[in-house]
Length: 281
Length: 255
Image (tube, rainbow over all chains, first blue to last red):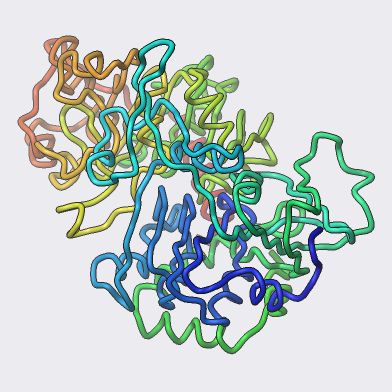
């Protein structure tokens, strides 16, 4: 059964140095508050998995928490590049970063394979694509029935997955609504799962029977962090802070500006600042 | 006819390529503007799909990301990302994929991964995202980008997404049954692949564009189709709808 506790306690008990970590949320519901707590607690040597590293991993990488990144699209969506990640890849600042690069289809399939308890994912992909040449984890298998050659990648099995969701009940069931991304698969593929939520409610009696609900026993810890996805968004609560995504490009373009921003807004702050930030969004 | 910019001509020519019956997988940026312009003008029933899982979406402003809330709110349905890539894209339900490119070669192969060597890149670009499988699994591919010698090159640094490969029947040799790139829409022209060699050749030049301008902004030696024509200029309606869409988008994103 999921334990409802503070974010600091959830992070303290669920993630260790060197862990393989997925923080998912496809543009929507990105668990920014949880990542900030991981940074504050100084976790290091993490293998970070995320389809779209986004600002959340730009920050973890820039703060030196990561050893390796597994990803499929490393842009600031609609804005440009991820400058801290790029500085790590091109200049090893603040430390070298190993990368394992895939396509979206490969990672989505790999999460699903992880949730399904399979060792690998099989799909029709990477045809004529050069990632095969540079990523030894992209292989192929031949269909035993038709002879078709298909792409194969290892299943994703994180030590711990972090997601943000709209609601949890007091007994710890979690409701995710809107753009679902790969969150359900990422939780079911992981050994441990931490969920931050906008709201804790009595029950889900008014929820549609086919809604995306993660039962309490699939989740390790839940923390109530209103606004915890900002500058990403939580459908029904607040919108994506597109102007911050644009502003981040400038902050992240300079090592000193980045370090100063992280000091003020992460190291010397706490999860309670997120509720304030989403007012008016 | 009022004046128009090369960018407006590009978006309008790209929108015209889409039909009302299309199911279109939309890339972010220039493709997104073209696809939504098509929906707001001649193709009101077009199905627009974004890789965030939103199917049949109808945003009133252009999204900044492929997962803006507006896409989900206005969609017929929103599915998970694994379902999007497995059932809908790989399942063969998408007629057109609309892609942009950082680097493009004359056979429609796209690079959005690195400039320079993969291990020691001169510039690390965002990467493929959904594009490698969009390029192979959609019925056909439209590409849109602004012409520049840096963007349209003889040889791309990295094949993120396969177009016609080495040309000719290279797609078939790779086991692909889909058509691959069938149209390239730039700020200066509309290009189509030669039926045999599959090299992009110019089908129509946008109004006022010269062959000199074309060659200056393209890194390969350009071939022109035998029946080279002129792209019809934007209509007043096309321009008005596009400008309104851009103004709403700018206001919404704090411009």
